[in-house]
Image (tube, rainbow, N blue to C red):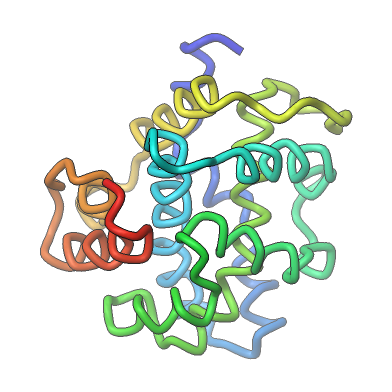
Length: 210
């Protein structure tokens, strides 16, 4: 996949992979609240993953392997079925992204930032994490057909894909991504105060490695 193809893949396309209604039904939660939480949590997951890959002092080997494994899992093939998502694996992915902090710890940190209640965030994170990694892995491999087992993507190439997803996002000014990513990477974000707060929290979860 060349850079031009990467640039067509943004957060809006990633959001489109997520079965919001089915997730809300499974969790017994309000669909609007679930959608609102997803709009904050997905960029946080992508931004956290990019922070790991970009940092020289963080070993992202396990995350890179997880990206390859989720891409090969077939999770996105024919549309995501919530019951096929391995939430246990999702919890491991969340901990890998956020400096060893599990879904409960991340949810506690993010509660009150506009992403919804801590209880909802805690339930969503392990569902969203495998979907996000599967999507990123698909973009890396450039293969829209069912994925075959493949080597884990390297940090450099994976970083390019993550940057293109983040940079290609649409959705206008209500998307807190710029501030979230700026806070995580120490790049000073460009969005509203809410995003800066989330970015600071994520930076703390990553152990201050910016």
